[in-house]
Image 1 (tube, rainbow, N blue to C red):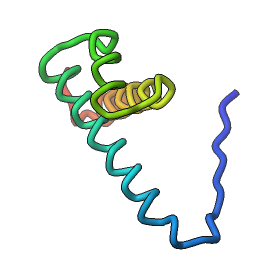
Image 2 (image 1 turned 135 degrees about the vertical axis):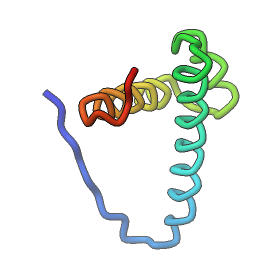
Image 3 (image 1 turned 90 degrees about the vertical axis):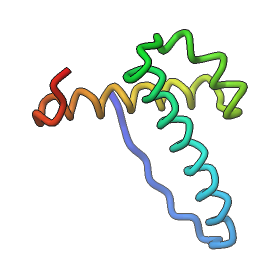
Image 4 (image 1 turned 120 degrees about the vertical axis):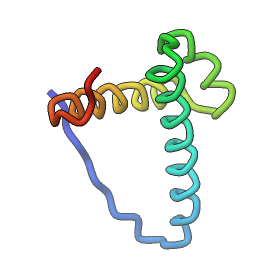
Length: 83
């Protein structure tokens, strides 16, 4: 069973920190998309490189990879991708 949790951060001073973390995660996810779907590299080949390059944990990398798969599957179902 999967669950999604949401929390509100009362201290707005943390907002820039969270924004920069989200930006880094988005950069890593975009780079993984290019490596995996454009260059055809297997995700397992990219993992250690991305952990070092972006400073991700294995769990964060796995989340980015799973998110890409979900987006790609959704795009195929929508008919916006022909692969």
